[in-house]
Image 1 (cartoon, rainbow, N blue to C red):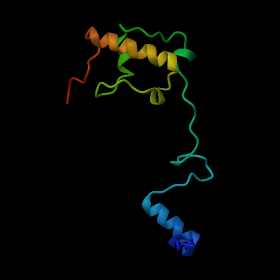
Image 2: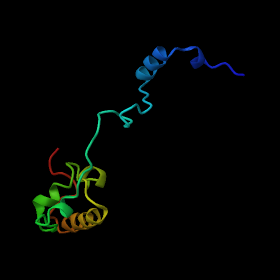
Image 3: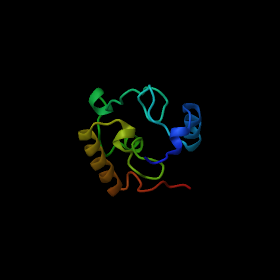
Image 4: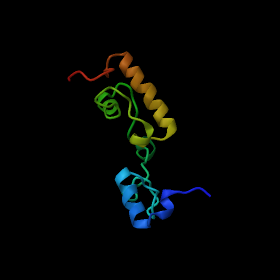
Amino acid sequence: MSYNREDKMDSGARDARDAREGRDDGDERGSRRGGGFSRKKVCRFCSDQDFIMDYKDIRMMQSFVSEHGKITPRRISGNCAMHQRKLTSAVKRARNLALVGYVSSGH
């Protein structure tokens, strides 16, 4: 049988070491990073039928594009897969027509 240092450690010392090294085993809350329960994001286009996706609507397009010109991912924006694909096509079309920039204008 091999000797393991953790066998000799009590649980308090092990918890202190894990906290110091940034380890988290996913405690009772069920999340790995803590912070508690978060609600599932709802697709804006599915929930509100008046919220129309149009590549000519610059204000709407810019709300889904970051400061660096990246399209916001689905896990952040909360869009469903179908609308995220349509949004990506609309942003690319708006970029092609120079309505939305590829990168931000200021530094």
